[in-house]
Image (cartoon, rainbow, N blue to C red; front, side, top):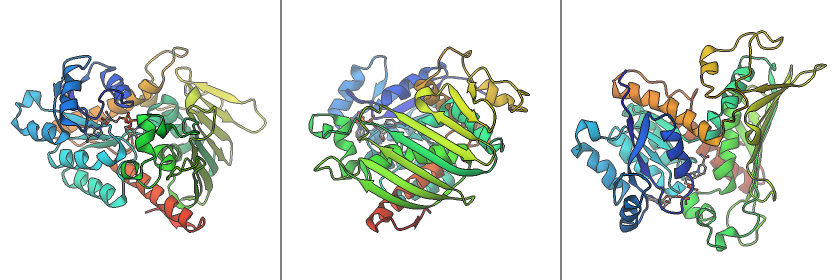
Length: 392
Ligand SMILES: NC(=O)c1ccc[n+]([C@@H]2O[C@H](COP(=O)([O-])OP(=O)(O)OC[C@H]3O[C@@H](n4cnc5c(N)ncnc54)[C@H](O)[C@@H]3O)[C@@H](O)[C@H]2O)c1
């Protein structure tokens, strides 16, 4: 396989922006891909200006339309291999659609789109054009998430009975959107964020982590969306009770008014033989609780087969760890693991080979579509006093 450095284009990431920067670090981590072009802002002059002042040389474009359009004029060795869309939610759909139509793979932020018809459209386009598509559910990229998925899906804690997936933050406990906080301003504006703030922003992570670790689908949801900060149009606290595809139940919840909580994202899975606990703020380890035994803490890099609980561990899972135990991987490493997995599919696509894009290494376009469907169902349940709604 051709191992040349992949060329990545950014949509979003101008001065003062947040999440483009973790993406840039993640893309560059292995030296096998680099950001070479960008449409950094919606204002054309500002986009060009920011590109000129970028920390390293990139080709600046006035808009994503121009960047995508330009690809067909470029020689093969300058064309982008994929684009990363890291704009507010209302500006995901259009660049993703244009890129797919031009045959350019897309790594898009969550929640995928503002509504279900846009999400469905992206799914159809990525299928009909056969183009790889990733959705940036960062937490799937922690080694401990991969390991938890293996533990649960190989039946080691038995049949899943109950899941509590909870993502708590406190940064919107006050009206930060009125204090010039850009990230708060668009997240609480329905025209830019969609029909749910807290649910769309972090509830979708809690939803996706449950699906990724357990392999179960959330079939029905009964929801309460609340807004505790006076004058805020959208939810800052999001609670759903869910029916899962094996007949078990779950709580999927998120809050941005939980003062003191930074990124307290925890999932606890209770099975018929034992329980598993994963915490993003302590993401180097996974806790397994078994009856009548001391609790087991599995640290990344320090996991061995035949320990009285684990029989075998897939070789490719062990190989995904990047450092010896005790030297911390973290958030950037998780995002890098997603980019690394996606890049493999992009290389296969470039070679006209089959690619996976099956949701086992990163969230795909169907996962993104389901995330939007989950939010739709939750909002509609809340409007009907918590009535059960199907996710489809
Ligand atoms: N996966 C994760 O863990 C994670 C974490 C944080 C944010 N996010 C997602 O990332 C996205 C961006 O969030 P953020 O907090 O970085 O926002 P931000 O406001 O910090 O940055 C958004 C950037 O997009 C630019 N932009 C807006 N419209 C544009 C357009 N039409 N063309 C080009 N650029 C445009 C803005 O100028 C800005 O540079 C959101 O969808 C958010 O949900 C994901």
